[in-house]
Length: 120
Image (cartoon, rainbow, N blue to C red; front, side, top):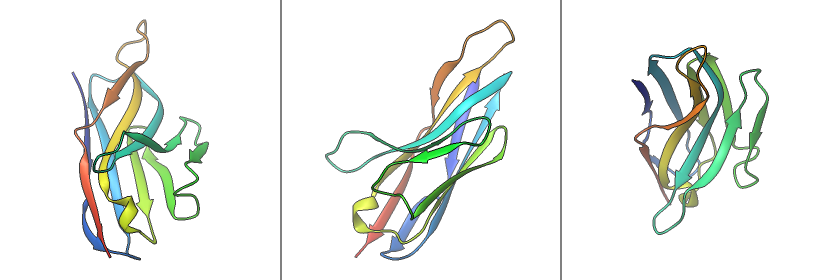
C-alpha cells in the first residue's frame, strides 16, 4: 500500500556529484522523519542523513559538509551528494516513518535501494 521509490544513482568519478530522490506513494496520511541509509560492499547498513517533518536535519560525520538532505515536499526527500569519494560507493536506501490512516501508528518503510558507484 505504501511504496518508496528511489532514483538518481549511477556511476561518477571521485569529486563529482549526484542527486538522489525518494518519493513516497500509496495510502499515506502523514510522514514523520525521512532518512537515507547506505550499505557498502561487505559492510553493514549505516545511517547517512535524516530530516524531520519540520525540516530539522542531521547527518553522519563521514558525509558532513559534502551531503545535504532536504524535502521537496511532504512526500519527497532529496540527498544532494557533492565531493564524492570512492568510499561513498554503496547501495543507498530511503527510509520513512509513515502513518497510513488517522487512527494508525507510524510504520517504518524502506525503498528498494539505488546503486551509487564512485570511481577513483
